[in-house]
Length: 196
Image (tube, rainbow, N blue to C red; front, side):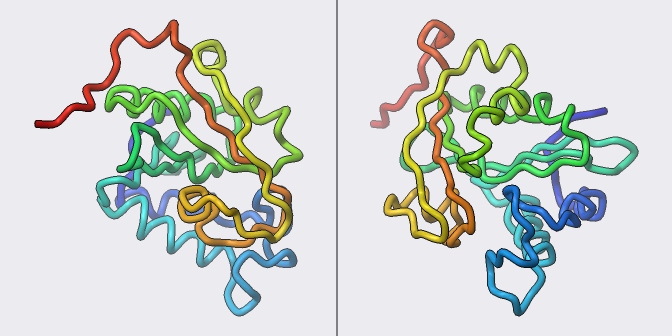
Protein backbone atom coordinates (compact mmCIF):
# COMPACT_ATOMS: atom_id res chain seq x y z
CA UNK A 1 0.00 0.00 0.00
CA UNK A 2 1.23 3.47 -0.93
CA UNK A 3 -0.33 6.62 0.53
CA UNK A 4 -0.18 9.58 -1.83
CA UNK A 5 -1.88 12.79 -2.82
CA UNK A 6 -4.65 12.03 -5.29
CA UNK A 7 -4.89 13.67 -8.71
CA UNK A 8 -7.11 13.32 -11.76
CA UNK A 9 -4.96 10.33 -12.73
CA UNK A 10 -6.58 8.47 -9.80
CA UNK A 11 -10.19 9.24 -10.83
CA UNK A 12 -10.92 5.88 -12.44
CA UNK A 13 -9.16 3.99 -9.64
CA UNK A 14 -11.30 5.50 -6.90
CA UNK A 15 -14.75 5.23 -8.47
CA UNK A 16 -15.40 1.99 -6.57
CA UNK A 17 -15.30 3.96 -3.31
CA UNK A 18 -18.46 5.75 -4.47
CA UNK A 19 -20.47 2.55 -5.00
CA UNK A 20 -21.66 1.92 -1.44
CA UNK A 21 -25.34 2.51 -0.75
CA UNK A 22 -24.46 3.72 2.75
CA UNK A 23 -23.12 7.17 3.55
CA UNK A 24 -22.74 8.47 7.12
CA UNK A 25 -24.42 5.27 8.28
CA UNK A 26 -27.65 5.63 6.31
CA UNK A 27 -28.85 4.35 2.95
CA UNK A 28 -28.27 7.22 0.53
CA UNK A 29 -30.93 5.90 -1.85
CA UNK A 30 -33.76 6.14 0.70
CA UNK A 31 -32.54 8.92 3.01
CA UNK A 32 -32.06 11.55 0.34
CA UNK A 33 -29.16 13.94 0.63
CA UNK A 34 -29.83 15.63 -2.72
CA UNK A 35 -33.37 14.65 -3.69
CA UNK A 36 -34.37 11.60 -5.68
CA UNK A 37 -33.81 12.97 -9.19
CA UNK A 38 -30.17 11.80 -9.29
CA UNK A 39 -28.29 8.98 -7.61
CA UNK A 40 -26.34 10.30 -4.65
CA UNK A 41 -23.22 8.24 -5.45
CA UNK A 42 -23.05 9.48 -9.03
CA UNK A 43 -23.30 13.10 -7.95
CA UNK A 44 -20.84 12.60 -5.06
CA UNK A 45 -18.25 11.04 -7.41
CA UNK A 46 -18.54 13.85 -9.98
CA UNK A 47 -18.32 16.56 -7.32
CA UNK A 48 -15.36 14.85 -5.66
CA UNK A 49 -13.38 14.63 -8.90
CA UNK A 50 -14.21 18.21 -9.92
CA UNK A 51 -13.26 19.56 -6.50
CA UNK A 52 -10.47 17.47 -5.02
CA UNK A 53 -8.67 16.11 -8.08
CA UNK A 54 -8.65 19.17 -10.31
CA UNK A 55 -5.67 21.07 -8.85
CA UNK A 56 -7.72 23.64 -6.94
CA UNK A 57 -5.45 25.42 -4.45
CA UNK A 58 -7.32 24.71 -1.21
CA UNK A 59 -8.98 21.35 -1.91
CA UNK A 60 -6.87 18.20 -1.59
CA UNK A 61 -7.22 14.46 -1.11
CA UNK A 62 -4.89 11.70 0.00
CA UNK A 63 -5.47 8.01 -0.49
CA UNK A 64 -4.05 4.53 -0.14
CA UNK A 65 -3.31 3.07 -3.56
CA UNK A 66 -2.76 -0.58 -4.46
CA UNK A 67 -2.15 -1.53 -8.10
CA UNK A 68 -3.81 1.67 -9.32
CA UNK A 69 -6.91 1.17 -7.15
CA UNK A 70 -7.62 3.66 -4.36
CA UNK A 71 -8.76 1.65 -1.33
CA UNK A 72 -9.22 4.55 1.13
CA UNK A 73 -9.32 8.31 0.83
CA UNK A 74 -9.56 11.43 2.93
CA UNK A 75 -10.33 14.82 1.42
CA UNK A 76 -9.93 18.22 3.03
CA UNK A 77 -10.18 21.96 2.54
CA UNK A 78 -7.40 24.31 3.68
CA UNK A 79 -9.00 27.39 5.20
CA UNK A 80 -7.98 30.85 4.02
CA UNK A 81 -9.33 32.67 7.09
CA UNK A 82 -7.48 30.71 9.78
CA UNK A 83 -4.61 28.22 10.15
CA UNK A 84 -7.03 25.29 10.10
CA UNK A 85 -8.16 22.60 7.71
CA UNK A 86 -11.51 20.88 7.31
CA UNK A 87 -11.69 17.11 6.93
CA UNK A 88 -14.55 16.94 4.44
CA UNK A 89 -14.81 13.30 3.45
CA UNK A 90 -13.67 9.77 4.15
CA UNK A 91 -14.34 6.74 1.98
CA UNK A 92 -12.84 3.31 2.32
CA UNK A 93 -12.97 -0.31 1.22
CA UNK A 94 -9.96 -1.06 3.47
CA UNK A 95 -10.62 0.45 6.89
CA UNK A 96 -7.19 -0.60 8.18
CA UNK A 97 -5.61 1.93 5.77
CA UNK A 98 -7.50 4.95 7.13
CA UNK A 99 -5.01 5.83 9.92
CA UNK A 100 -2.11 5.91 7.44
CA UNK A 101 -4.09 8.15 5.07
CA UNK A 102 -5.05 10.48 7.92
CA UNK A 103 -1.40 10.59 9.06
CA UNK A 104 -0.42 11.74 5.55
CA UNK A 105 -3.10 14.47 5.58
CA UNK A 106 -1.98 15.58 9.06
CA UNK A 107 1.71 15.66 8.03
CA UNK A 108 0.86 17.72 4.92
CA UNK A 109 -1.10 20.24 6.96
CA UNK A 110 1.41 20.46 9.80
CA UNK A 111 4.13 21.20 7.24
CA UNK A 112 1.96 24.11 6.07
CA UNK A 113 1.35 25.51 9.57
CA UNK A 114 -2.17 24.08 10.01
CA UNK A 115 -2.26 22.57 13.48
CA UNK A 116 -5.99 21.98 13.93
CA UNK A 117 -8.84 20.63 11.86
CA UNK A 118 -12.60 20.37 11.90
CA UNK A 119 -14.66 17.34 10.96
CA UNK A 120 -18.34 16.44 10.82
CA UNK A 121 -19.74 12.95 11.22
CA UNK A 122 -22.77 10.95 12.32
CA UNK A 123 -23.11 11.68 16.06
CA UNK A 124 -23.76 8.02 16.89
CA UNK A 125 -20.14 7.24 15.87
CA UNK A 126 -18.60 9.79 18.26
CA UNK A 127 -16.98 7.14 20.48
CA UNK A 128 -15.51 5.03 17.66
CA UNK A 129 -14.40 7.88 15.36
CA UNK A 130 -10.88 8.32 16.80
CA UNK A 131 -10.32 4.63 17.50
CA UNK A 132 -10.98 3.66 13.88
CA UNK A 133 -9.47 6.66 12.07
CA UNK A 134 -6.43 7.74 14.09
CA UNK A 135 -3.07 6.03 14.41
CA UNK A 136 -1.70 5.66 17.95
CA UNK A 137 0.73 8.50 17.20
CA UNK A 138 -2.07 10.84 16.08
CA UNK A 139 -4.22 9.89 19.09
CA UNK A 140 -1.33 10.77 21.39
CA UNK A 141 -0.44 14.07 19.71
CA UNK A 142 -3.94 15.39 18.99
CA UNK A 143 -6.69 16.33 21.42
CA UNK A 144 -10.24 17.29 20.54
CA UNK A 145 -13.31 19.21 21.59
CA UNK A 146 -16.80 18.67 20.28
CA UNK A 147 -18.07 22.00 18.96
CA UNK A 148 -21.78 21.43 18.27
CA UNK A 149 -24.56 19.01 17.40
CA UNK A 150 -26.71 19.62 14.32
CA UNK A 151 -30.09 17.85 14.44
CA UNK A 152 -31.42 15.69 11.61
CA UNK A 153 -32.12 17.62 8.36
CA UNK A 154 -31.31 20.95 9.96
CA UNK A 155 -29.18 23.78 8.59
CA UNK A 156 -26.05 24.42 10.65
CA UNK A 157 -26.09 28.03 11.86
CA UNK A 158 -22.30 28.47 11.61
CA UNK A 159 -21.40 29.47 8.08
CA UNK A 160 -17.96 27.84 7.75
CA UNK A 161 -19.33 24.52 8.97
CA UNK A 162 -22.44 24.85 6.78
CA UNK A 163 -20.48 25.77 3.65
CA UNK A 164 -17.48 23.47 4.04
CA UNK A 165 -18.40 20.47 6.21
CA UNK A 166 -22.09 20.16 5.36
CA UNK A 167 -21.64 21.33 1.77
CA UNK A 168 -24.92 23.22 2.22
CA UNK A 169 -26.79 19.91 2.60
CA UNK A 170 -29.46 18.95 5.13
CA UNK A 171 -27.98 15.71 6.43
CA UNK A 172 -30.50 12.98 7.38
CA UNK A 173 -28.71 12.05 10.65
CA UNK A 174 -27.79 13.94 13.81
CA UNK A 175 -24.31 15.29 13.09
CA UNK A 176 -21.44 16.24 15.34
CA UNK A 177 -18.83 18.90 14.50
CA UNK A 178 -15.47 18.28 16.18
CA UNK A 179 -12.31 20.39 16.43
CA UNK A 180 -9.13 18.30 16.64
CA UNK A 181 -5.94 20.14 17.55
CA UNK A 182 -2.23 19.45 17.98
CA UNK A 183 -1.56 19.51 21.72
CA UNK A 184 0.65 22.35 22.99
CA UNK A 185 3.53 20.07 24.02
CA UNK A 186 3.90 18.91 20.41
CA UNK A 187 4.00 22.40 18.91
CA UNK A 188 7.71 22.92 18.35
CA UNK A 189 7.25 25.98 16.16
CA UNK A 190 4.28 28.13 15.34
CA UNK A 191 3.43 29.34 11.85
CA UNK A 192 4.44 32.93 11.02
CA UNK A 193 1.25 34.94 10.64
CA UNK A 194 2.68 38.44 10.14
CA UNK A 195 2.70 40.19 6.77
CA UNK A 196 4.24 43.58 6.01
